[in-house]
Length: 397
Image 1 (cartoon, rainbow, N blue to C red):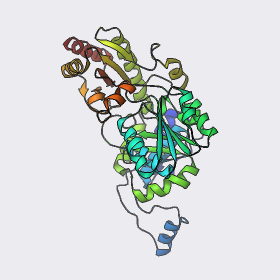
Image 2: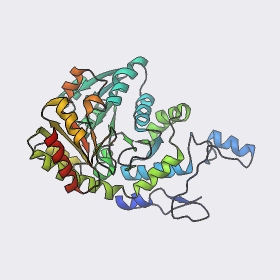
Image 3: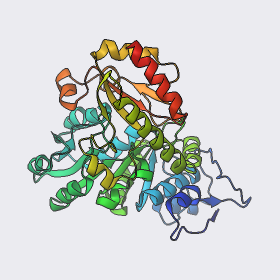
Image 4: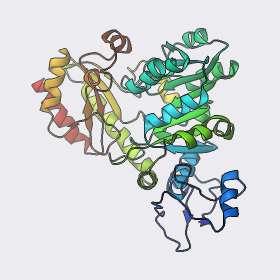
């Protein structure tokens, strides 16, 4: 395969279209899909060299694949990371990053505002392997500092967080991690590399559910772990090769092609979401509207300092709790009820009964996941149509 021109000083939108591209002898303009599990060798000596690392060719798609490698290289370029490894899902990326980087006796500190499955991994799965944890208010730097121990090896946060859109000061938490010789892992799925690049603020590892904005059309599952070469060599690579959370080449190809329009899509999501948030804030049926770039968001200034725009998610609370929230969701005509997000189509979620259903009522209350809270993933439709649909549904609520 022939390698494309090196990015050099290409800007992000160009990298999203051209980064990491390799071409076969056919010189195809669309990246090739290598839907193969294995590879043939010219000789037994070459096969031996592949397994010892002396020959850089491909061995097995669980380890690497030309299409997956292109997706990984492009994601690394967009995030400003040295390397990336694609996984079968976003949670496979989170699990691989944490399990590969922690040992029995280690300790992790995490912001308590997070996706329900991430909380399960940290609070339920890791303790089975003798890895302790402390959950903190992500916005309280004193809590981060106070939770650190000699055995603390990792810190984990989502920003914006799911579903309350809490914003955490990445640079400040990264400094705490550095001072204690720990690594900061940031879930960047809600912002995408278009709006936020955590490594520029000192994060050591970044994870994505590429199922969300990177795919952008609700088609294929995927995830990515981005890191430096040391973390890959000492932790992630052996875990990845031997436990097998590999992305499908087809899914990698779909997500690779989706990156070409990522910048255009995400900015339109943001424009629509800002309009929808302002519309909802002027209605009577909500007690609060959460959107990072609105001046009434608790971390408004911080959001503007580390994000380029407010993102495509708006969370809001329906007065009247769960019954009113269900009436509202059931009355929507254009917006779909779904637990996914980042789709071209607008999707509404009731976190209390779906994504955060497994948490205790006390834990949900602590996070602000109330019976009336709704998470709206604002799509690429006309914002006026979305506001009209929301208005008629609010009357039904």
